[in-house]
Image 1 (cartoon, one colour):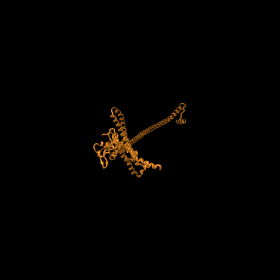
Image 2 (tube, helix red, strand yellow):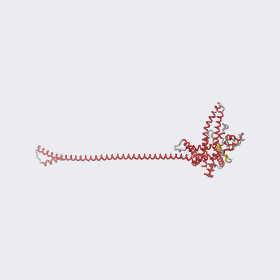
Image 3 (cartoon, chains in turn green, cyan):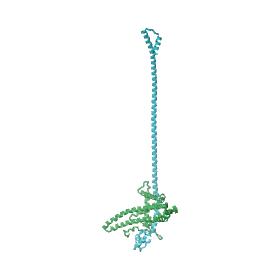
Image 4 (cartoon, chains in turn yellow, orange):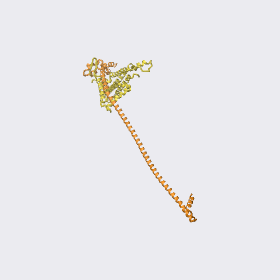
Length: 252
Length: 199
Protein backbone atom coordinates (compact mmCIF):
# COMPACT_ATOMS: atom_id res chain seq x y z
CA UNK A 1 0.00 0.00 0.00
CA UNK A 2 1.80 3.04 -1.20
CA UNK A 3 -0.19 5.70 0.47
CA UNK A 4 0.48 8.20 3.18
CA UNK A 5 -0.34 6.24 6.38
CA UNK A 6 -1.79 9.35 7.98
CA UNK A 7 -4.13 10.14 5.10
CA UNK A 8 -7.56 10.33 6.79
CA UNK A 9 -9.44 9.96 3.50
CA UNK A 10 -7.86 6.72 2.40
CA UNK A 11 -10.18 4.65 4.58
CA UNK A 12 -13.12 5.60 2.41
CA UNK A 13 -11.42 4.44 -0.77
CA UNK A 14 -13.35 1.79 -2.66
CA UNK A 15 -11.40 -1.01 -4.31
CA UNK A 16 -12.59 -3.54 -6.83
CA UNK A 17 -12.26 -7.06 -5.56
CA UNK A 18 -14.07 -8.82 -8.39
CA UNK A 19 -14.48 -6.51 -11.39
CA UNK A 20 -17.89 -6.92 -13.00
CA UNK A 21 -18.94 -4.83 -15.93
CA UNK A 22 -22.33 -5.04 -17.57
CA UNK A 23 -22.58 -2.83 -20.65
CA UNK A 24 -21.44 0.62 -19.63
CA UNK A 25 -22.12 -0.01 -15.95
CA UNK A 26 -19.50 -0.97 -13.42
CA UNK A 27 -21.06 -3.40 -10.96
CA UNK A 28 -17.77 -4.64 -9.50
CA UNK A 29 -17.78 -6.50 -6.23
CA UNK A 30 -15.87 -3.99 -4.12
CA UNK A 31 -14.75 -3.76 -0.51
CA UNK A 32 -17.95 -1.81 0.09
CA UNK A 33 -20.01 -4.70 -1.29
CA UNK A 34 -17.92 -7.12 0.77
CA UNK A 35 -18.80 -5.27 3.96
CA UNK A 36 -22.46 -5.11 3.00
CA UNK A 37 -22.37 -8.88 2.61
CA UNK A 38 -20.49 -9.20 5.92
CA UNK A 39 -23.03 -6.96 7.65
CA UNK A 40 -25.92 -9.06 6.42
CA UNK A 41 -24.18 -12.37 7.06
CA UNK A 42 -23.04 -11.49 10.59
CA UNK A 43 -26.38 -10.02 11.61
CA UNK A 44 -28.46 -12.84 10.17
CA UNK A 45 -26.10 -15.46 11.60
CA UNK A 46 -26.17 -13.85 15.03
CA UNK A 47 -29.94 -13.54 15.10
CA UNK A 48 -30.36 -17.09 13.82
CA UNK A 49 -27.71 -18.68 16.00
CA UNK A 50 -28.75 -17.05 19.27
CA UNK A 51 -32.35 -18.19 18.86
CA UNK A 52 -31.42 -21.81 18.04
CA UNK A 53 -32.38 -23.01 21.50
CA UNK A 54 -35.77 -21.28 21.41
CA UNK A 55 -35.29 -21.11 25.16
CA UNK A 56 -38.20 -20.32 27.38
CA UNK A 57 -35.58 -18.85 29.65
CA UNK A 58 -33.31 -17.01 27.19
CA UNK A 59 -29.58 -17.49 27.04
CA UNK A 60 -27.36 -14.43 27.02
CA UNK A 61 -27.28 -14.16 23.23
CA UNK A 62 -30.97 -14.83 22.93
CA UNK A 63 -31.60 -12.03 25.41
CA UNK A 64 -29.67 -9.62 23.19
CA UNK A 65 -31.69 -10.69 20.16
CA UNK A 66 -34.99 -10.48 22.01
CA UNK A 67 -34.15 -7.10 23.50
CA UNK A 68 -33.26 -5.67 20.09
CA UNK A 69 -36.42 -7.15 18.63
CA UNK A 70 -38.71 -5.78 21.32
CA UNK A 71 -36.86 -2.46 21.43
CA UNK A 72 -37.53 -1.97 17.72
CA UNK A 73 -41.10 -3.19 18.07
CA UNK A 74 -41.80 -0.69 20.85
CA UNK A 75 -40.12 2.09 18.91
CA UNK A 76 -42.35 1.43 15.90
CA UNK A 77 -45.50 0.97 17.98
CA UNK A 78 -44.90 4.22 19.85
CA UNK A 79 -44.32 6.18 16.67
CA UNK A 80 -46.81 4.64 14.25
CA UNK A 81 -49.32 2.80 16.42
CA UNK A 82 -50.46 -0.82 16.06
CA UNK A 83 -51.19 -0.30 12.35
CA UNK A 84 -47.50 0.41 11.85
CA UNK A 85 -46.52 -3.10 12.90
CA UNK A 86 -46.91 -4.27 9.30
CA UNK A 87 -43.65 -2.40 8.65
CA UNK A 88 -41.87 -4.09 11.54
CA UNK A 89 -39.70 -6.37 9.33
CA UNK A 90 -38.73 -3.35 7.24
CA UNK A 91 -37.83 -1.16 10.21
CA UNK A 92 -36.04 -4.00 11.97
CA UNK A 93 -34.01 -4.73 8.81
CA UNK A 94 -33.04 -1.09 8.42
CA UNK A 95 -32.14 -0.69 12.08
CA UNK A 96 -30.06 -3.86 12.21
CA UNK A 97 -28.37 -3.18 8.88
CA UNK A 98 -27.36 0.36 9.77
CA UNK A 99 -26.37 -0.56 13.32
CA UNK A 100 -24.17 -3.49 12.33
CA UNK A 101 -22.70 -1.62 9.36
CA UNK A 102 -21.79 1.28 11.68
CA UNK A 103 -20.33 -1.01 14.33
CA UNK A 104 -18.37 -3.08 11.80
CA UNK A 105 -16.83 0.19 10.62
CA UNK A 106 -15.33 0.63 14.07
CA UNK A 107 -12.87 -2.21 13.49
CA UNK A 108 -9.49 -0.97 12.29
CA UNK A 109 -8.96 -1.55 8.55
CA UNK A 110 -12.65 -2.27 8.10
CA UNK A 111 -14.68 -0.38 5.55
CA UNK A 112 -17.66 1.63 6.77
CA UNK A 113 -20.55 1.05 4.38
CA UNK A 114 -22.58 3.92 5.81
CA UNK A 115 -19.79 6.46 5.31
CA UNK A 116 -20.81 6.74 1.66
CA UNK A 117 -23.61 9.14 0.89
CA UNK A 118 -24.96 7.03 -1.96
CA UNK A 119 -25.64 4.12 0.42
CA UNK A 120 -27.38 6.18 3.09
CA UNK A 121 -29.26 8.11 0.44
CA UNK A 122 -30.45 4.88 -1.15
CA UNK A 123 -31.71 3.68 2.24
CA UNK A 124 -33.42 7.03 2.88
CA UNK A 125 -35.04 6.98 -0.56
CA UNK A 126 -36.21 3.44 0.13
CA UNK A 127 -37.91 4.68 3.30
CA UNK A 128 -39.50 7.67 1.57
CA UNK A 129 -40.48 5.48 -1.37
CA UNK A 130 -42.24 3.07 0.97
CA UNK A 131 -43.97 6.01 2.67
CA UNK A 132 -45.21 7.47 -0.62
CA UNK A 133 -46.24 4.18 -2.23
CA UNK A 134 -47.98 2.83 0.86
CA UNK A 135 -49.58 6.20 1.62
CA UNK A 136 -51.05 6.46 -1.87
CA UNK A 137 -52.14 2.81 -1.88
CA UNK A 138 -53.84 3.07 1.48
CA UNK A 139 -55.38 6.53 1.29
CA UNK A 140 -55.36 7.37 -2.41
CA UNK A 141 -55.34 11.08 -3.08
CA UNK A 142 -56.43 11.76 0.50
CA UNK A 143 -52.86 11.07 1.45
CA UNK A 144 -51.90 14.50 0.09
CA UNK A 145 -53.78 15.99 3.05
CA UNK A 146 -50.45 15.38 4.74
CA UNK A 147 -49.34 18.64 3.15
CA UNK A 148 -52.43 20.56 4.23
CA UNK A 149 -52.50 20.99 7.98
CA UNK A 150 -55.97 21.63 9.39
CA UNK A 151 -57.00 24.94 11.02
CA UNK A 152 -54.76 27.14 8.91
CA UNK A 153 -56.12 30.50 7.70
CA UNK A 154 -56.87 30.43 3.98
CA UNK A 155 -54.48 33.30 3.35
CA UNK A 156 -51.53 31.45 4.84
CA UNK A 157 -52.45 28.09 3.33
CA UNK A 158 -50.36 28.30 0.12
CA UNK A 159 -47.31 29.25 2.12
CA UNK A 160 -47.85 26.51 4.70
CA UNK A 161 -48.41 23.89 2.00
CA UNK A 162 -45.24 25.01 0.27
CA UNK A 163 -43.30 24.70 3.53
CA UNK A 164 -44.78 21.25 4.17
CA UNK A 165 -43.81 20.07 0.70
CA UNK A 166 -40.27 21.41 1.04
CA UNK A 167 -39.96 19.79 4.45
CA UNK A 168 -41.16 16.47 3.02
CA UNK A 169 -38.72 16.63 0.13
CA UNK A 170 -35.85 17.47 2.43
CA UNK A 171 -36.54 14.41 4.58
CA UNK A 172 -34.55 11.89 2.53
CA UNK A 173 -31.73 14.42 2.28
CA UNK A 174 -31.56 15.11 6.00
CA UNK A 175 -32.03 11.45 6.85
CA UNK A 176 -29.20 10.29 4.61
CA UNK A 177 -26.81 13.20 5.19
CA UNK A 178 -27.15 12.91 8.97
CA UNK A 179 -26.02 9.29 9.03
CA UNK A 180 -23.39 9.72 6.33
CA UNK A 181 -21.89 12.88 7.83
CA UNK A 182 -21.75 11.45 11.33
CA UNK A 183 -19.96 8.33 10.20
CA UNK A 184 -17.65 10.20 7.85
CA UNK A 185 -16.72 12.95 10.29
CA UNK A 186 -16.20 10.52 13.15
CA UNK A 187 -13.91 8.29 11.16
CA UNK A 188 -11.94 11.21 9.76
CA UNK A 189 -11.49 12.67 13.25
CA UNK A 190 -10.31 9.34 14.59
CA UNK A 191 -7.88 8.96 11.71
CA UNK A 192 -6.57 12.52 12.05
CA UNK A 193 -5.74 12.04 15.73
CA UNK A 194 -4.30 8.61 15.05
CA UNK A 195 -2.22 10.26 12.34
CA UNK A 196 -0.87 12.73 14.92
CA UNK A 197 0.17 9.80 17.09
CA UNK A 198 2.00 8.23 14.16
CA UNK A 199 3.65 11.44 12.96
CA UNK A 200 4.81 12.45 16.44
CA UNK A 201 5.91 8.92 17.20
CA UNK A 202 8.37 8.99 14.31
CA UNK A 203 10.02 12.15 15.64
CA UNK A 204 11.99 10.47 18.44
CA UNK A 205 11.69 10.38 22.24
CA UNK A 206 10.15 13.82 22.66
CA UNK A 207 7.69 13.07 19.92
CA UNK A 208 6.59 9.82 21.59
CA UNK A 209 6.00 11.79 24.77
CA UNK A 210 3.98 14.32 22.81
CA UNK A 211 2.00 11.53 21.16
CA UNK A 212 0.42 10.54 24.46
CA UNK A 213 -2.13 13.35 24.31
CA UNK A 214 -3.55 12.54 20.87
CA UNK A 215 -3.46 8.85 21.84
CA UNK A 216 -5.70 9.55 24.82
CA UNK A 217 -7.87 11.55 22.45
CA UNK A 218 -8.12 8.59 20.09
CA UNK A 219 -9.19 6.32 22.94
CA UNK A 220 -11.86 8.77 24.06
CA UNK A 221 -13.03 9.35 20.50
CA UNK A 222 -13.29 5.62 19.91
CA UNK A 223 -15.73 5.35 22.78
CA UNK A 224 -17.63 8.35 21.43
CA UNK A 225 -17.72 6.81 17.97
CA UNK A 226 -19.24 3.59 19.34
CA UNK A 227 -21.93 5.74 20.91
CA UNK A 228 -22.44 7.64 17.66
CA UNK A 229 -22.61 4.41 15.67
CA UNK A 230 -25.42 3.06 17.85
CA UNK A 231 -27.12 6.41 18.23
CA UNK A 232 -27.22 7.18 14.53
CA UNK A 233 -28.68 3.76 13.77
CA UNK A 234 -31.33 4.48 16.40
CA UNK A 235 -32.02 7.96 15.01
CA UNK A 236 -32.31 6.56 11.50
CA UNK A 237 -34.77 3.92 12.69
CA UNK A 238 -36.83 6.34 14.79
CA UNK A 239 -37.16 8.79 11.91
CA UNK A 240 -38.10 5.90 9.64
CA UNK A 241 -40.87 5.02 12.09
CA UNK A 242 -42.10 8.61 12.19
CA UNK A 243 -42.13 8.94 8.41
CA UNK A 244 -43.98 5.63 8.15
CA UNK A 245 -46.50 7.07 10.58
CA UNK A 246 -47.20 9.75 7.97
CA UNK A 247 -47.98 7.03 5.46
CA UNK A 248 -50.41 5.35 7.85
CA UNK A 249 -51.99 8.40 9.47
CA UNK A 250 -51.64 11.30 7.04
CA UNK A 251 -53.78 13.61 9.19
CA UNK A 252 -51.61 15.68 11.47
CA UNK B 1 -20.16 20.15 -6.46
CA UNK B 2 -17.71 18.60 -4.03
CA UNK B 3 -16.34 16.41 -6.76
CA UNK B 4 -15.55 19.28 -9.06
CA UNK B 5 -13.95 21.26 -6.25
CA UNK B 6 -11.81 18.32 -5.37
CA UNK B 7 -10.83 18.04 -9.01
CA UNK B 8 -9.85 21.67 -9.12
CA UNK B 9 -7.76 21.52 -5.97
CA UNK B 10 -6.09 18.27 -6.84
CA UNK B 11 -4.08 19.66 -9.72
CA UNK B 12 -1.71 16.76 -10.08
CA UNK B 13 -4.35 14.11 -10.42
CA UNK B 14 -6.70 15.99 -12.74
CA UNK B 15 -4.61 14.77 -15.64
CA UNK B 16 -5.69 11.22 -14.81
CA UNK B 17 -9.20 10.24 -15.63
CA UNK B 18 -11.15 7.83 -13.42
CA UNK B 19 -9.82 4.33 -13.75
CA UNK B 20 -11.56 2.12 -16.22
CA UNK B 21 -12.39 -1.43 -15.40
CA UNK B 22 -9.68 -2.88 -17.58
CA UNK B 23 -6.95 -1.04 -15.70
CA UNK B 24 -8.24 -1.91 -12.30
CA UNK B 25 -8.63 -5.55 -13.19
CA UNK B 26 -4.91 -5.98 -12.75
CA UNK B 27 -3.22 -7.05 -9.59
CA UNK B 28 -2.32 -3.65 -8.19
CA UNK B 29 -5.87 -2.49 -7.97
CA UNK B 30 -5.29 -0.37 -4.92
CA UNK B 31 -2.28 1.27 -6.40
CA UNK B 32 -4.07 1.93 -9.67
CA UNK B 33 -7.12 3.32 -7.89
CA UNK B 34 -4.91 5.47 -5.76
CA UNK B 35 -3.20 6.89 -8.80
CA UNK B 36 -6.48 7.63 -10.49
CA UNK B 37 -8.23 8.82 -7.34
CA UNK B 38 -10.55 11.60 -8.48
CA UNK B 39 -10.85 13.41 -5.18
CA UNK B 40 -13.02 12.58 -2.22
CA UNK B 41 -14.09 8.90 -2.41
CA UNK B 42 -17.62 9.23 -0.96
CA UNK B 43 -18.48 11.65 -3.76
CA UNK B 44 -16.89 9.58 -6.49
CA UNK B 45 -19.72 8.56 -8.83
CA UNK B 46 -17.56 5.85 -10.34
CA UNK B 47 -18.76 3.28 -7.81
CA UNK B 48 -22.36 4.47 -7.44
CA UNK B 49 -23.86 1.73 -9.65
CA UNK B 50 -21.87 -0.95 -7.90
CA UNK B 51 -22.78 0.30 -4.44
CA UNK B 52 -26.43 0.63 -5.34
CA UNK B 53 -26.58 -2.82 -6.89
CA UNK B 54 -24.84 -4.55 -4.02
CA UNK B 55 -26.86 -2.63 -1.46
CA UNK B 56 -30.03 -3.72 -3.24
CA UNK B 57 -28.88 -7.33 -3.32
CA UNK B 58 -27.61 -7.50 0.27
CA UNK B 59 -30.41 -5.50 1.82
CA UNK B 60 -32.99 -7.39 -0.21
CA UNK B 61 -31.62 -10.72 0.96
CA UNK B 62 -31.37 -9.40 4.51
CA UNK B 63 -34.98 -8.18 4.48
CA UNK B 64 -36.20 -11.46 3.03
CA UNK B 65 -34.22 -13.50 5.57
CA UNK B 66 -35.50 -11.46 8.52
CA UNK B 67 -39.08 -11.42 7.31
CA UNK B 68 -39.44 -15.08 6.43
CA UNK B 69 -37.05 -16.87 8.76
CA UNK B 70 -35.63 -14.93 11.66
CA UNK B 71 -38.42 -12.67 12.81
CA UNK B 72 -41.11 -15.38 12.85
CA UNK B 73 -38.64 -17.37 14.91
CA UNK B 74 -38.05 -14.63 17.48
CA UNK B 75 -41.73 -13.72 17.46
CA UNK B 76 -42.58 -17.37 18.02
CA UNK B 77 -40.24 -17.58 20.99
CA UNK B 78 -41.74 -14.46 22.56
CA UNK B 79 -45.27 -15.66 21.82
CA UNK B 80 -44.46 -19.02 23.38
CA UNK B 81 -43.18 -17.35 26.49
CA UNK B 82 -46.20 -15.08 26.75
CA UNK B 83 -48.52 -18.07 26.33
CA UNK B 84 -46.58 -20.08 28.87
CA UNK B 85 -46.67 -17.25 31.40
CA UNK B 86 -50.39 -16.74 30.80
CA UNK B 87 -51.00 -20.48 31.23
CA UNK B 88 -48.95 -20.57 34.40
CA UNK B 89 -50.79 -17.59 35.80
CA UNK B 90 -54.08 -19.24 34.91
CA UNK B 91 -53.03 -22.46 36.61
CA UNK B 92 -51.92 -20.52 39.68
CA UNK B 93 -55.26 -18.73 39.72
CA UNK B 94 -57.08 -22.03 39.44
CA UNK B 95 -55.04 -23.55 42.26
CA UNK B 96 -55.75 -20.57 44.43
CA UNK B 97 -59.47 -20.81 43.84
CA UNK B 98 -59.26 -24.55 44.58
CA UNK B 99 -57.49 -23.77 47.81
CA UNK B 100 -60.11 -21.17 48.65
CA UNK B 101 -62.86 -23.67 47.97
CA UNK B 102 -61.18 -26.31 50.11
CA UNK B 103 -60.81 -23.80 52.90
CA UNK B 104 -64.46 -22.81 52.66
CA UNK B 105 -65.52 -26.47 52.69
CA UNK B 106 -63.32 -27.15 55.67
CA UNK B 107 -64.74 -24.20 57.54
CA UNK B 108 -68.27 -25.25 56.77
CA UNK B 109 -67.58 -28.76 57.96
CA UNK B 110 -66.00 -27.39 61.07
CA UNK B 111 -69.05 -25.27 61.75
CA UNK B 112 -71.33 -28.23 61.16
CA UNK B 113 -69.33 -30.41 63.49
CA UNK B 114 -69.36 -27.72 66.09
CA UNK B 115 -73.13 -27.32 65.90
CA UNK B 116 -73.55 -31.09 65.98
CA UNK B 117 -71.42 -31.28 69.08
CA UNK B 118 -73.50 -28.51 70.56
CA UNK B 119 -76.75 -30.34 69.92
CA UNK B 120 -75.37 -33.62 71.26
CA UNK B 121 -74.30 -31.88 74.45
CA UNK B 122 -77.65 -30.18 74.65
CA UNK B 123 -79.52 -33.45 74.18
CA UNK B 124 -77.41 -35.18 76.78
CA UNK B 125 -78.04 -32.38 79.23
CA UNK B 126 -81.74 -32.45 78.43
CA UNK B 127 -82.05 -36.21 78.92
CA UNK B 128 -80.05 -36.06 82.12
CA UNK B 129 -82.35 -33.32 83.33
CA UNK B 130 -85.41 -35.39 82.40
CA UNK B 131 -84.04 -38.45 84.18
CA UNK B 132 -83.38 -36.41 87.27
CA UNK B 133 -86.87 -34.96 87.09
CA UNK B 134 -88.45 -38.41 86.80
CA UNK B 135 -86.42 -39.72 89.72
CA UNK B 136 -87.37 -36.72 91.78
CA UNK B 137 -91.05 -37.24 90.98
CA UNK B 138 -90.82 -40.91 91.85
CA UNK B 139 -89.18 -40.11 95.18
CA UNK B 140 -91.73 -37.39 95.81
CA UNK B 141 -94.56 -39.85 95.20
CA UNK B 142 -93.02 -42.43 97.50
CA UNK B 143 -92.52 -39.87 100.18
CA UNK B 144 -96.09 -38.64 99.79
CA UNK B 145 -97.36 -42.20 100.14
CA UNK B 146 -95.26 -42.73 103.22
CA UNK B 147 -96.48 -39.43 104.64
CA UNK B 148 -100.08 -40.35 103.95
CA UNK B 149 -99.63 -43.74 105.61
CA UNK B 150 -97.98 -42.14 108.59
CA UNK B 151 -100.76 -39.57 108.89
CA UNK B 152 -103.39 -42.31 108.66
CA UNK B 153 -101.64 -44.21 111.35
CA UNK B 154 -101.41 -41.11 113.52
CA UNK B 155 -105.13 -40.47 113.01
CA UNK B 156 -105.88 -44.11 113.93
CA UNK B 157 -103.76 -43.90 117.02
CA UNK B 158 -105.34 -40.63 117.97
CA UNK B 159 -108.86 -41.98 117.49
CA UNK B 160 -108.17 -45.11 119.49
CA UNK B 161 -106.47 -43.02 122.17
CA UNK B 162 -109.45 -40.69 122.34
CA UNK B 163 -111.88 -43.57 122.62
CA UNK B 164 -109.81 -44.97 125.48
CA UNK B 165 -109.91 -41.50 127.15
CA UNK B 166 -113.73 -41.82 127.42
CA UNK B 167 -113.46 -45.18 129.12
CA UNK B 168 -110.80 -43.88 131.50
CA UNK B 169 -112.93 -40.84 132.32
CA UNK B 170 -115.97 -43.10 133.02
CA UNK B 171 -113.87 -45.38 135.24
CA UNK B 172 -112.37 -42.38 137.04
CA UNK B 173 -115.83 -40.83 137.52
CA UNK B 174 -117.25 -44.11 138.72
CA UNK B 175 -114.43 -44.62 141.16
CA UNK B 176 -114.60 -41.03 142.48
CA UNK B 177 -118.38 -41.24 142.94
CA UNK B 178 -118.09 -44.49 144.79
CA UNK B 179 -115.07 -43.81 146.96
CA UNK B 180 -115.65 -40.13 147.76
CA UNK B 181 -119.40 -39.60 147.59
CA UNK B 182 -120.41 -43.23 148.05
CA UNK B 183 -122.89 -42.78 145.28
CA UNK B 184 -123.72 -45.74 143.15
CA UNK B 185 -124.37 -44.50 139.65
CA UNK B 186 -125.30 -46.56 136.68
CA UNK B 187 -122.92 -46.93 133.82
CA UNK B 188 -125.33 -45.16 131.47
CA UNK B 189 -125.64 -42.11 133.73
CA UNK B 190 -121.84 -41.86 134.03
CA UNK B 191 -121.35 -42.16 130.30
CA UNK B 192 -123.99 -39.47 129.76
CA UNK B 193 -122.29 -37.14 132.24
CA UNK B 194 -118.87 -37.70 130.80
CA UNK B 195 -120.15 -37.01 127.31
CA UNK B 196 -121.91 -33.89 128.68
CA UNK B 197 -118.66 -32.65 130.25
CA UNK B 198 -116.54 -33.45 127.20
CA UNK B 199 -118.72 -31.33 124.99
